[in-house]
Length: 160
Length: 104
Image 1 (tube, chains in turn blue, yellow):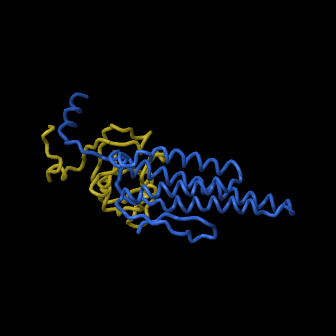
Image 2 (cartoon, helix red, strand yellow; image 1 turned 180 degrees about the horizontal axis):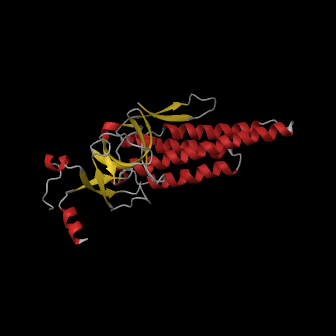
Image 3 (spheres, one colour; image 1 turned 180 degrees about the vertical axis):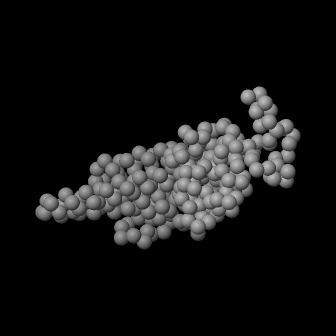
């Protein structure tokens, strides 16, 4: 073994990365915002469901709830990726409430799942918008709030 | 040998190379801090095969992943630790020419 170790040590050692620290730079809070609007839309549609035909009601409710669950998952994943991978410690100094905002988004997203809660979904959109605003500002971009192009009320945060 | 220049052409001519693995994406099969050997000649006459673990060049770094599939010269790679791996599911396929060699 000693001999093998000696021979091995003659070879220079290089680094091979087996992690996800590739600075791909492709981050965008848009997907999280779209997911938040989808959650709101699902809750609105659930409230509007016709309960006369029970069979149809149960079937449609199951579909809407499945989509709502999917979009809360998308929202949480997208926010977590930007928070965990994009933001660096020196950037956090400029946005000291970022951790709290992300924590609250996670909780609020769960809240929208617990019930058919339109108001909670609207609040979630606002919170994700706030997160998006911090993201764009951290990149030195000018932020703009525009009316969403979706069949529901609300603003979407974009960069100019 | 700490003063050895790892980038010197001499070392690149050798058929095998020694790598220190940094990161968790290949766990449990290859743990962070492991030293692995790479055979640069493995794919000289043959193509990479599914489940081969390969070292490849990507954006100026050498990465290590497992071959998931091969289509022509395009290789799809995945990390064994799917909860913490940035691989072809994110950056897409790589060209066969980017492969440095097979982990032996």
